[in-house]
Structure formats: C-alpha cells, structure tokens
Image (cartoon, rainbow, N blue to C red; front, side):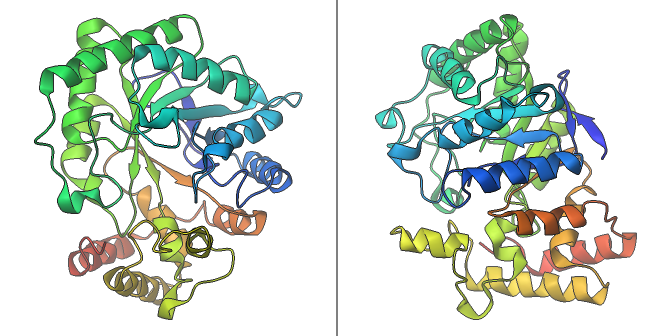
Length: 352
C-alpha cells in the first residue's frame, strides 16, 4: 500500500486509515483485534481513535474504552513499532469533563491519560476533536452562527494549547498535531499562531468528506494545499448511507442507524438519512453499476483522485465488513468515471 507523510510532519502513514470508534460498543474486543490484524496484513498501519470513543451512542461509562481495547493490542509483542496511532482530545461535551472547554493544562492531562489507556509511550498524531469556539460540523451548518466568537480569546486559546503541544512533542509524547471538525478560518489561524510561536504546525485535519458531503472542496482545500495539511476524511461512506442498506426506509438489524434508534436516538445517521441523501445514493449506485464497479469500492477510490492529499478513514463493525472494504483498496477509477461523478455531484449537491 502507498504511504504518505502527514502534512509537513515526519509521520509517515498508510494511505488508508482504520477507524476504531465502534470498539467496545458495536465491536467487541475479540472482533476489534481481528480487525486490526486484518488491516495490518493488508498494509494499513494507521489507526485512529479518540478519548470519547466508542460512539453510537457516547456514554459516560464507556469513555476511553476504545483506547483501552486498542491499547491491549498495541501491547502485544512486536506490534507498536509497526503502526501509527492517532487519537483526540474531546471538545466541549457533557459526557466528558462535564462539558468544560479544554486548555493547555487539560491537554497535558489528557495526553497522559490516553498514553496510559493505549499502553504506549507516544502518540503519532494528537488531534483536537472539536474547536472550543464552536463548529458547523454534523449538520450544524444549516443554522451556524459565529457571531458570538471573540477573536482574541480564540487566538489566546490557540497559543495556550500550542504551548502544551510543543512541550508534549519535545518530551516525545506526541509526534504531530492535528485538528478535527475545523473551518478554513480556524485552520489558517492555527497555522499562523504555530508559526509565530515556533510550535507544532497542523499536520492533518480530520473532517467529514464523502461523495455526498463535499464541504471540504473549496476554502478548506485551498488552505490545506497551501499550508501543507493532509485531510483525514471521516465517514467516506456517509456513515453507511452510501452502502445503500437503508433503501426504502430499511433499518437493518445492528446497523448504525438501528443501534442509534434503539439507544434513544433518531436513527437518522446524524442527519444524513434524508430523502435527498437516499436519491443521491441510488444515483451513485446506478453509476457504479454502469461501470461494473462495486459502489463501496468506488466511493473510497474516488477520494484518492482528489486534487489535495486525502487519507480516507474506513471503519467496520465486524470483520466481514472490513474484509469487503479491503478487497477494493487497489481499485483505480478510470478518468471517464471520475468525470461522471463530477457531473452527478452537480445534480445532487449537499443532499443533507
């Protein structure tokens, strides 16, 4: 598998990343360890986690469990030096730190806590899960209101956090720094403040990106290219919507939507499960069939055709799903199919 370097850092990773957000909830430890072994055998050495995982739903009592499960695997002989591990500090959340924002002092504590759960002496990429000033991710774009933000307060927060990250990198606890659910303005300012301080520069940004959700394509893509920041794209299958398993209002047992609904949620895949989203999904499936292509493999392969550096994060609730994903990682899209996808995107812009 091709390897890429995250932004301007020295961290080299596989071009595909395995997400672990279901470890400890939909995926038990035995299956989780089978998944990471299968991924490693396929050349996937990059693993993404977070202190708040598992999700769907997030529960106070399971915070950190995904890191613990991953850590038991990392502690096995001969494993740690073969992989690169990313994790994140949670942004404002009632489930973690009672909703309090994080600062430099918090970062110092959470890095140590993640290292302990992961049973390792270093984190290859340490990410900020959510901006403390707010975000338009997860459908918050429809009524996003940044008018309450205070610019100097934000810049002071960035300097405080970057100071803690600089100390962590100096001590060898982290190798690189990344963002998540961030905006073009935020990414630019993080880079500016880091340059002024001589602190770690942003190496990667983990934002949602898929055939159905292409907010990254304009302003963020421009910043990422010019500032040398790699996109780690989460939900490349739109939380499973692009698999088309929810066609005709279907709700497969043990699917993400079904688990969410059973836990008291809406079962709408975080606002992705809309009529327009289903229409777009069916159109992409028809296009894949036209070209004799598996639609899931097409959706992942398309990401690697973009004019900016992308590392898709694939995830599965079980080994069978992961096996199917891995089977398509060598797929290359013909130019005519890429152009057809661009045309189809114009017919189905922002379906959720």
